Image (cartoon, rainbow, N blue to C red; front, side, top):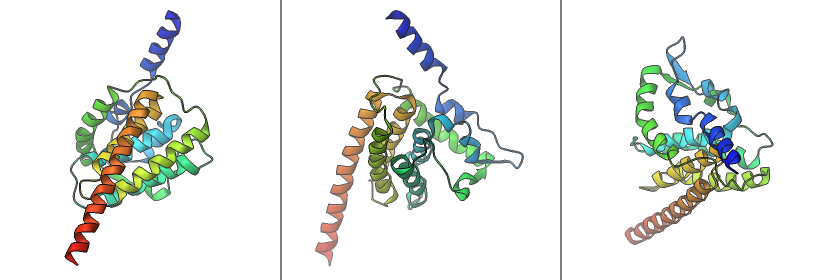
Length: 209
């Protein structure tokens, strides 16, 4: 039993954290950083990793309407997680080749990485129960629902589902069953809150008109 525990500990230590991968990103010869730079590195943990990458920017203050842009890649990734026959994400050329000025991207990373490291500190391989592709498809369907909520410009309704997607994505990457349960629970709460906000907004509009 002790040998099995030591083997699990060693395996978890050998896994390079997503924050470490992102922290090592450097601009290319053109001075820019693109999504395609991550594709090869994240191939083995594609769905979960890209959920995290596209969810985390929604956790920092951004201009109104930014979720209309940032939510689309989340919808694409979660849809593929649910419906694709592949075991890794396929990104359209326009998204895969999307790039940012290197200095601006690194400054953004400085804001994103503390959030990611905070979530990572609680996630590790344990009690993973989604061991089939069908199980992953059900998770993808739930992630798709959360992604749609992130995409819709709901006042105060985007942060929590984005946080849930980040937790779900990291848990999927690290195969953390407890983390996945926590992410699903946060996601359910976020859907309920978004529903309350929409109902309240509808009632207010009905009263005005």
